[in-house]
Structures are given as C-alpha cells and as structure tokens.
Image 1 (cartoon, rainbow, N blue to C red):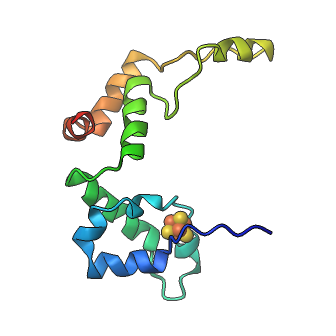
Image 2 (tube, helix red, strand yellow):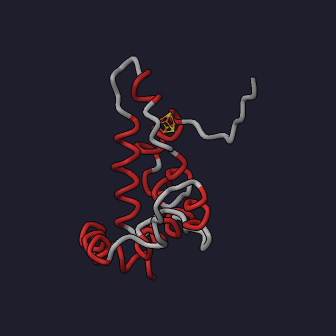
Length: 128
Ligand code: SF4
C-alpha cells in the first residue's frame, strides 16, 4: 500500500482558521481540500471541517484570493461550461463507440444561466 503525504493536514488547517485566518485566506493550502468529507464523518466531536473549509474558501474568494489552478478551472467553465477542455477530435472518438457528439461547449442559454449563477462580481475577479 502506498501512502502519499503532501503535508496537508485538516487538523492543522482547522487550527489556522482560528489562529491565522488572514494568512490562510491568502494561501493556496486552503484550496487543497477535495471535499471528500472524511474528516467530517470521522470527527468525534461532531465538528464539520469540510463545511468550515468551504465557508473559509468562499471568504478567500470574496477577498480575491483564488489560486491560479481553481481560477483557470472556473474560467474554463465560464467559457465552455466544462471544467476541462474537450479535445477537438473528442466527438469523433465518441462516434466510433456509437455515442452522440457532445460538442466543445454547452448551449448559449446554459452559459448565460451559468454567468448569472457565478455572478458578475466573481466574473470580474476571475478576469482580473
Ligand atoms: S474533506 Fe477530505 S480532503 Fe477535505 S480536509 Fe477533510 S479529509 Fe481532507
């Protein structure tokens, strides 16, 4: 069994929420949580770290602290409705398996609705 450690520790992250909030808001570490909810499910005190990290991340985004990778993903979603670009020959591959094409983007209506959900403030931050 392989154990990979990146030094990420939800307990330390939670401590920083109360001891170094501004530093945490400005760090990329806050964005490493993958929302697996394991820490929330296992916490013997019923603390919900995942929700706390989500709220803290929202606060960071409000202050404009969005690391390059999530910023790029959000920009990609805004442009195409998809979190990763669809390769130009993707529909051709799908056709070989008898699957219908999905196209490079979602409909303009869906993109417009998405812009409303994201909100103009967040869009300006992403484009800054
Ligand atoms: S939700 Fe999962 S990824 Fe996020 S801090 Fe808890 S255990 Fe780590």
